[in-house]
Length: 257
Image 1 (cartoon, rainbow, N blue to C red):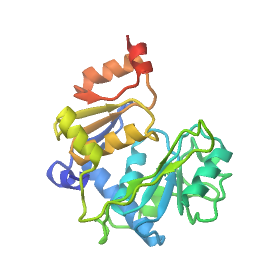
Image 2: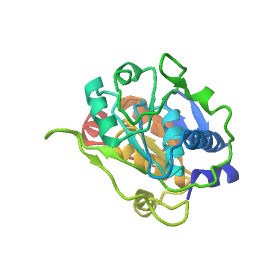
Image 3: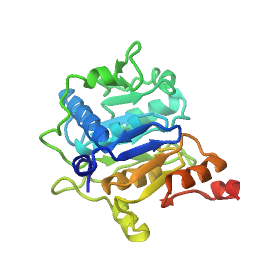
Image 4: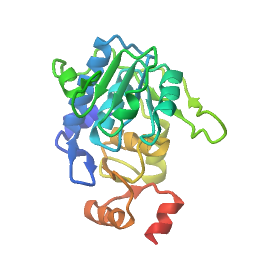
């Protein structure tokens, strides 16, 4: 019930396939997320602490979220469409101690100055005030941290009736790892298992795409990720990768029809 198990049993199997052909295997996801988890511990982040990220749909997003998930951290995925003021509110409100961005989001994140932030990481190279994620994790081992514990996402509402509101749930108790509620749902409703192929066409900062994708990775399935929804490309990806289940909103259905 964890990608690490499939990193051992099927290390070269794709955990993530992007619509542009980029692929990350289960071994790569396991090793890189382990390194980031070690980085978080080295920076002083302990179980129950918080990180925030603003990343477009890309493999590194899963590396960061799985690092937080296995280190017992809360992680807040922020919309890449937010401006600096909106990001400032969320990052400060959730108490993030680490902030992760990319070339696409870092201009807005530069203006975020929450007092708790101790670590700023850029997934595609360093720049003033930001450390390169690749360089920062290089000294750290690819093996799991000693005190693995289940973390949890803390995502925010859309803010249509005021400021966005963070939804914080208690961290799972008990042994690590544990199947998530969404993972059990995938198994019961869709028969998801290691032979499944899940297609995620929506932004991963939304709750359903992020949770379904990570739940599928707990089961050893392959997650195909679209950077942006396009109806013809969606149908082509279903055919090319023999997708077994997906999740779309009505507007996407209408565009496909």
